[in-house]
Image (cartoon, rainbow, N blue to C red; front, side, top):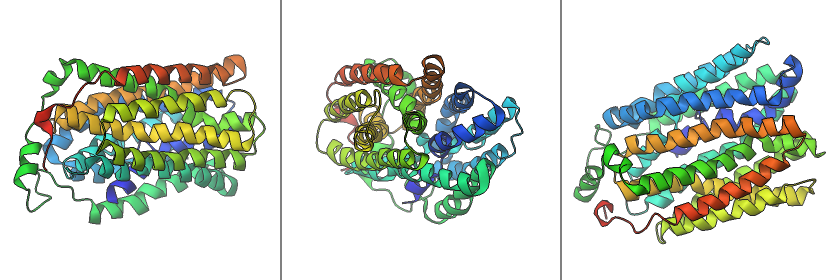
Length: 396
C-alpha cells in the first residue's frame, strides 16, 4: 500500500498525467506551442534518465526507504515552483527539471526494488498491485487537475498537485514503507530469500548478454507509443469536439485500465511464461491506436483508451518482473535503472514528437499510426527472450 501511494505521488507519474489538463490553459496564457510545453516533459524525463543509474546505486547501497522519503518532498518543491512561472520558457524547464532531480528517488527503480526484494513466491502479483499506483494516478490526476484549474486557475492546480506528495504520500511512506532488504529494515530474512538477494548477474554481465538488449529495445518501441498517446489523449479528444470533462473521463478510463492491466498481468506472469503474456498485451494497443483515427464516439474513444491503458499497465511491471527473473536480484537496481533510463527517454521524447506532428499537420492521426506499428515491433522482440534462467528463481 505504501509503495502504491509512493508511485501515485512520484516524479514519473504525477507530472506526466497532469500535464495534459494544464497544456491548454498555460499555452493560451503565454502563447507557447503545444510542442514547446510538452518539451518540458522531455527535459524532465531526460534528467530522470541521466540520474537513474545513480538512483539505482543509492538503492543498492542505502535501501529504498532512505532514497524515497527525501525525494517525495523534493517533487513537491518542484511543483510549487511551476506555479510561479511568469511567461519565460526557461522557468517552465527549471520547474520540471527540479521535479526530476529533487524527486529522482521516486522513480520505479526505488519502488520495484522494494517489491522485488520483499516478495518471491507471488512477485508478479505484488508488483502488479503496487504499480497500480500509475493507473490510479492516470484516473484521478486529470480529473483533479481539471477541477483545480477550473476552481483556482492553473497556478492553483500546481499547488494543489504539490500537496499530494507532501501531505499524503510522505506520512504514508514514513509509517508504512519498510521493505525487506539488506539495510536493517527487516528483522529476519529467510534462508531462501537471503540467497536470492545475493544471486544474479552484475550490470556488466547483463549488458554483454543478448536478453538485456532484446528487453531494452522492446521497452524502447513500446513506450514510444504509450508515452506519445498518454499525455496528448485529452488534447486530441477536445480537438475532436469532446468537452474537457468528457475528455478527462476518457483519460480516466485509460487510467482504470492501467490498474486492471497491472493486476491481471501480475497474476498471469506468476503462472505463465512472462514474454508470451507480454506479447499478447503489446498486440492489444495496436488496435486501440488504430481506433483513435479521425472522429470517434465517446464509447469508441473509451474502448480505445481501455485497450491502450491495459497494455501500458502491463509493461512497467513486466519490465520489473523480467529484469528480476532473467538477471537476478544481486544487482537488480543497477540493471533496472538502465532499462528505466530507456523508458524515461521515451516518456520524454514521444509526447513532444506527437505534439510536433499535431503542430505540423493539425491532427494526431499520423502519430497514432506510427504508435500502432511500434507496438507490433515490440511483440516480435519480446518473444525472443527465451526460457527463464534456472539459477535466479529466488525464495520458494
